[in-house]
Length: 94
Image (tube, rainbow, N blue to C red; front, side, top):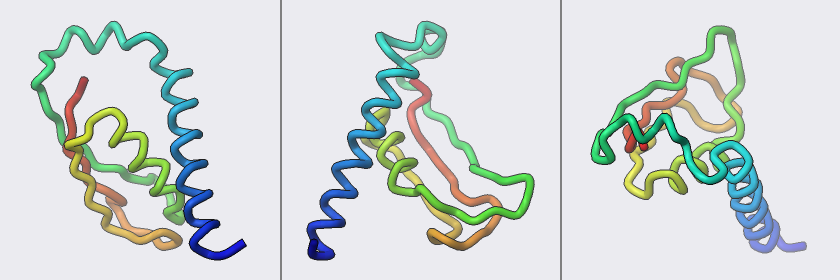
């Protein structure tokens, strides 16, 4: 398998994993989200309370992009490294 093919296969698997996880977790909708105005945006930081190695950024990004195509994600660390906070996110809360 060529490297290009394996990257493509990984990207497809990430999308499949994220679609399955969101279908399971959100299902037909998040009723509590209806309590928040649709245009509301939020900002968050991803932190770790203990030393950790960052991994899984493709899944993280795919999940947020499926929920909000306009999401802004800024990583403060690269895969296999650590930093705190690990990431800053700005996205729709619904």
